[in-house]
Image (cartoon, rainbow, N blue to C red):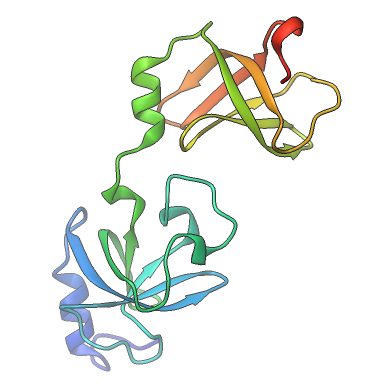
Length: 179
């Protein structure tokens, strides 16, 4: 991509950034591997449409099907600076870091053993994912029977990992597990 001598202004800009710093810009392009952001205070990138870059997991705390569910080309965004990618000469950003984590708020008010209602969001080989609060999904590994995405279930919280943002669930009582 080029070294310090080839792109001195870009290197100086990126080296001056500090992790946690808030950067603002405009979504310049959405690609299958991430989102480019033209930063307000940054120089132009020699190859890419923007100096800022956001990988898909850093776009939102919530599950989404496509990046366009979260951002649009031309939209104004603010992201937290994570790191300087010296290979691609990019400022790696996180948009989700600027928003409250719904999992942490959920974990503050929920305990193991609590019974909840939720909607099935994904059927996978490892189990069934159930959204029990806005932006909070948990995994039921135990067989539940015939279910489809969109079904409402009663589940019981069996474990929470705040650091890993993982919620483990079990099927609720048989008499009230499906709606």
